[in-house]
Length: 190
Image (cartoon, rainbow, N blue to C red):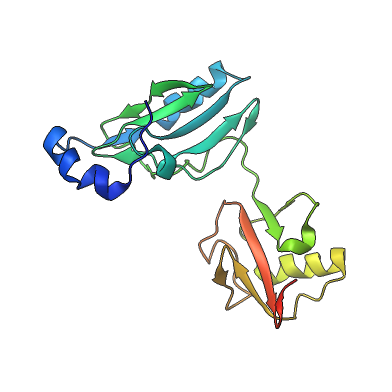
């Protein structure tokens, strides 16, 4: 059964230490996860750590569509699992795979990076972007499409102020993720 603890209670808490010795690292087995997805094409599948589910889990597949929510997939105290339509499946290896990151691997599905720009696009679907494009080029296209002057105010990406719009999303650390750009002008957001 999924747990809803936090890292400190699970890893350092008196109850965790008293009842469960810290063991070997367990790494999400993304290759097995991909096989399970292919075997369940009509399922909804989440991945995360069993004992810390609400802090580490995310949707990775939904009825034929790959999803890219945040997932944390390694621990020395919690168990990496997949939730396939409510069925919990342990899905880990104890030897760190080459190139492992705790989040979804770059090769996961046919990833499309999406960009949502502030509340001005409310009701419109997110747009795809290339992580190697600059913030300036994306905002210029946004201005051309919407008529909104992107030069007004300041912009943030997922809450972090954009200091140099001539840097690419990848250079700023936003390579291959869904992002939310917000324009801040005097008197509030657009």
